[in-house]
Image 1: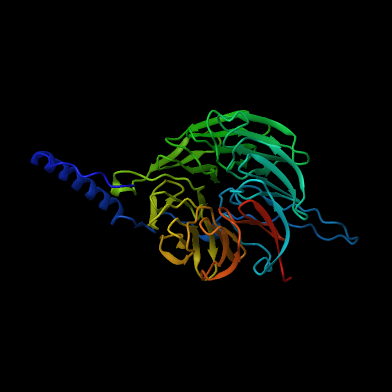
Image 2: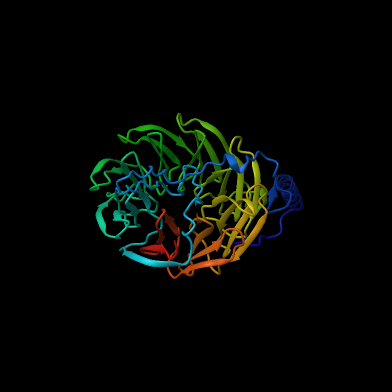
Length: 437
């Protein structure tokens, strides 16, 4: 933001009063943060990596004597892979790493800002024109396409035999829209118009569909009927998708607050504000989808910092400055040789690996351009897209050394299953196949 214009000299009393106010605010900021920018309280509750929620592919049944065709039951059900949005498929097969060979290419007609969901043999992707597209993942062929709205910026969710998607603007062009689709033919099971726009990637859990909207309303819908179970009103727009852990939903808003809400009742568990911008005199906004791991909630802010809060109480554990907007949603893993580590990009042109407990920078990689989309870990490689260069990069999770590059990509980079990586370009999807077994 630009600095205020110089003002004429005022009375000495007014100047003195202003200095007192500024001094008090400055002291308060220093007490709260130690120094402008960073704060670290690593002793705030932090659970051991063994208790961190993970998600692995469904186990395969034992082979019968007569060979049968295996049914593909792999799920990447939501934006961020797990309910906690950890964005880490660390149990990927060992060969699911660069170098890759290119398989099929799907070329869309609109920006693909968010990656697809995977449900067995199918990919479901929502483009920025509001079209939900079902793609056969072994061939790249389109099975069906349905119009959800005029504008969209989120990933679908799959589960319970359905596909769920949220649009920024519905077919009327006013507020948003949410709908449930049959996966085989795209038949609409139900749909609901929303009073405001919505770009929150939905989360399906225990028969409920959760997402936020720009008027600050967070919804819990009955996934079977679309009926509203409860709503929660935040103090600002809720752009990111909610994350779930131990019966609690977590999300940030555009008033600079982070919320924890009971997923069953919608009752507030805690709500905390930030005052990282302007030295305690204001707060940035939370666009990123939170990540929950190790008993902590992690998310970036437009004040340039990445935050970590205690999931149980909302107590601030650490906040580390990058110097520019952090729109990127973080990936987290217990990395061999490093320990619990958070991976996230910044508009300062760097991609960071933070100590998940203390917030200390373990390594950073200079990408040379703004990073807006989230990070994703597949095996021992963390991927991100460079918005400025419109490419995708993969780094070794332990060292930060570059091991992969692709000349397309802008926002959220990849999803994967046990046979391929599916890379989201600016307006295309690519199947990338491992070159080794």
